[in-house]
Length: 289
Image (cartoon, rainbow, N blue to C red; front, side):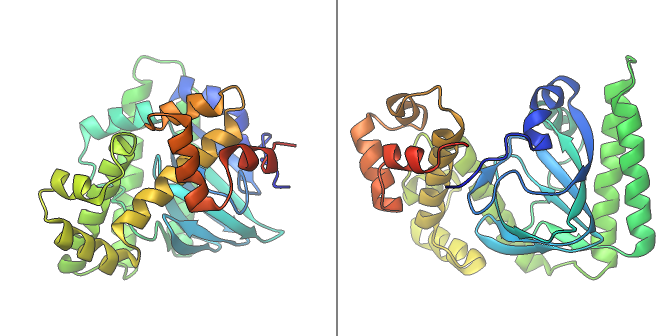
């Protein structure tokens, strides 16, 4: 039986994250859950101090090692497969509401650009620079002053600029043609997050992006190795699993409606086709212990 770590700091501090907008969490030694998709409602910037983590981010293999920094975006899917016994990270956690406030001040695509691989390695000097920024953010987040949010946004901007600058300085800059393809994937993902309850058809998303379904599908598969239809179904199933696992207060019928299915029967058929089991059986097998 899989165990959901309800005592993980991201779970324990969820109300505080929403109330304060930004929190810094030190001494995190594990993932919220292993070998199951986890969708964070927050932007989480992770700084790895020691140890390692293996997993997937939006269906791509990832690894985190000492002195890696990574930005995990709201509503993106991360699966932690394994962490070493000495794994230790610090997290800057920004609520979705506060993230939107930051985006109104600065260009989203310029800062914290969505990458197919969210992490990169930094030098010792760069690592110490980020640890100092984390301490500064932590101090500012706890003050009670009218200027608090404005100062925090300025510091997030600094963090974002340094991440982009160091990523390029360390040789991670990509050709413009590759960036254009990644931007299309990012736009598709943004639309999928907003509209997966409305439609699960590839043509729907191609229309939103003003592309032919054939061209759209070709670019997505070439860039990610996975077809657009598979992206859609995996995201829907991830959302379904997350709700079945964490929202025990909701009936399967209520979850069906929340996910945009007209009734429980169609949802159950869709879920079984993609997982091999019914929502009811999955909920039983994944009961929180």
